[in-house]
Length: 385
Image (cartoon, rainbow, N blue to C red; front, side, top):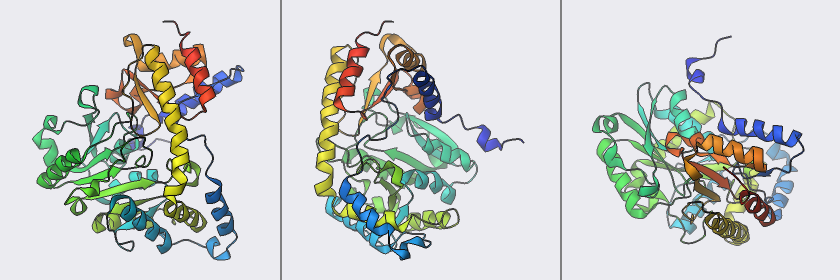
């Protein structure tokens, strides 16, 4: 049976190949240290789990959920945006529930992209941005994120004819995989450009609560953003809830309602019991997250110092739990990561997997305990080229 032309354009998902190589190493009996996938090793805080347990027992939660999400959950999302950023959103019209932000990001282009429309995608970047364009017969146009520009796109290098055809610009700050953050001035530039060329700004804010110094900002803290923007939030990293699949989108009512319409025809909404747990988490963010962030900050500080001591080049991130590190000796990123896995039994992610501009880098996820990170550093010190 022949695959669709769309699916033929899609390369194997990066982490599938990494898992295959990792499995081979495990079969050899190696003690593999996995710094690959960004899946927190810390358990979901017990108080969130307890809320979910009680919610599971409610018969009313065993029925189909509301497609847009339970009002109490959407209100918790709106309340969070108010407390954290000082922003007002109507939970009825400007918030919709997601089964994790990944599905919302993948489905959003269905609402707006027509064949031939341009979708601006960061490179390196989360693969779902350009895959959403491919699945809607749009054309991804890649915006290189370079070391020299602090991993921010340079819009002056985008041809005018591309901007005139653009339907959606994807942004992601704090950024995966680089760990970079963006200023209010940068977002002002983005909003002005989007208004000039009449395109949508879609901001993936999955890591907005995973920070160590100054709190990152929402794009909606820029005046006029609500006229043209939508922001995607995830509880996965913030509360170590990756497997729970819960998030939300917030922003311009037309954009939010269009996404909700797509979802109403594709999925049946997020499990209400999980929405109860998610609402509790958001309502108690200020008391839950500091202890989690403290753990990741300790890991960041330790491994950054160790890598720099070993001669690796990186910019210490102020957010996310990723380190974006230059591959030593000008090696190919895939070959370097393969060598690290084969010789040292350490999994790190080749930068090329996030886009062509990611070549020359590898990503480290700080998702093992400090003792494992110490062991990883000791092993890296023995690596021979």
